Length: 542
Image (cartoon, rainbow, N blue to C red; front, side, top):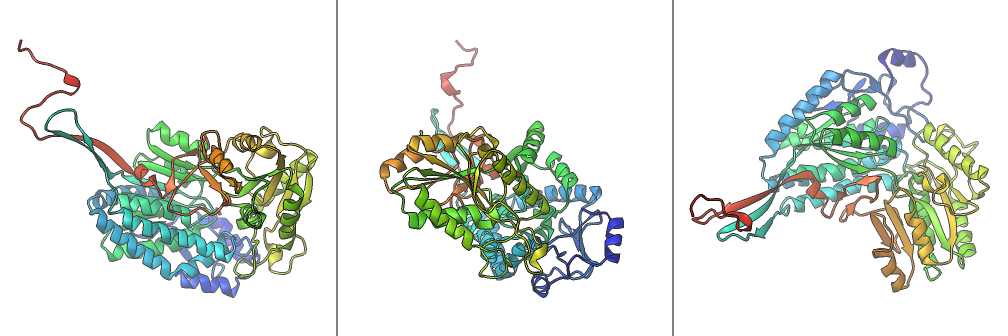
């Protein structure tokens, strides 16, 4: 964030890099061309007169705006309070809309997103830094979960439970929960909100979105698309509200008693604060925090499948997915052959413009992320680990990439596996892959389970006995337990989330929708008597 005084100073100085024509085209296609200010608050009306945000392209260092006078204005405290109040008011209206009608609105949102898929995917590439195919794929996730929500709107069923009392039935009934706040991270600036919005909207809730402060343009573009559909259907815009800003905005949203549930995706440190704050007021909280994911490769694995999958898992999104492969455990009999093939793939990848279809490696999102990468490499070197490939930032890149945050994907072989050592137990949000060697599957499972995180895991084998052990009670303790599929790249049909202390709840498919409703047990008496349960007698008559 920057103050308006600082902004005036920046206006008098030349921008770090002039805006490229391709960025201008993308912004125009998404109606992000206000001429000066882009309002960062939506509650049925666009507003924002607080501090300002400027979005910086991690590929080049350029400011993403059509001219130096353009910036995003976040909410003042008064505007934030109004947005929260309007979210509650919108919920009071929207909860009475029949669920299939809510599904029809989701269908229209799906169609509107599909029309803008390519442009919105390009904006994800420009603002977050992931390559074009991943940016478009992220928008497709939102489209897919909207499809899912359409069907779900006719299937959010309760249950009929048999009663022990004659002439009675018990119903378990789901009803809308209230206001759901979504605090999303920079690495998936569209999809995570989509996972939450689709389920929340199908359930009859209002949603207020506080995105990462470094990706405000993606959030504004998405909200413009969604709000147009809501307005066309006569639905209050605050059903899908937006408040951009930094920590102060997030704290206010999390602490607000107008918010019934907070869905937070981000770091362990911030997630701990969010969880404590929400639970202190007895609100509901959904947390998706760190992922320190392991791939285990057995001697019978198909390396033609496993090597490319580990490569994508570790290098895709420049190592900035929650499900990125960060630990690789190889059976001792295949270490040399596997690493030789993997190193060849690593050395073939080159940094480039994420909008270029040939690019596989985009930048890290910020300069601070580069510091995290360098600290991790330095820690490995000090421990005596061998750096097989990578280990440094790229130098002497051609313009305009020389202003970007590009680092070499790194494979490191520590001297031993000690899952209590920070080398193995800490999530490094960068393309750093640590390799360990095992002889028995039980040892690999112990290493897989020995870290505080429990999001995703992957086993590569063709032996059904290994599969049974891996997915069973003595197997992987992660929330995602894959076989012959990498740790990264989940589909929307199954619930997404981790186990252990660094995760709470589920997003996306499966039974995740049940978190977005309030449940009531309703006992109905249609008899001519009023017996008590368990045969209790409470009467003065003898």
